[in-house]
Image (cartoon, rainbow, N blue to C red):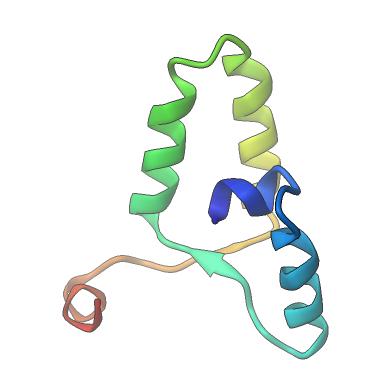
Length: 73
């Protein structure tokens, strides 16, 4: 879902924009960012994709992933 949001696929970015208009804060956690960055390492357009990822992440809140978050998960 995070990749779809950043890459404007499957309408995720439109749903996120609507949620923001209603006052929601859109964000993610470091493990999800790590998974995307790992996947980009093997991309033929790695540098372009990393720039796109970094730009997309600047628009999101990055919540810490700590023990209470793990317990909630």
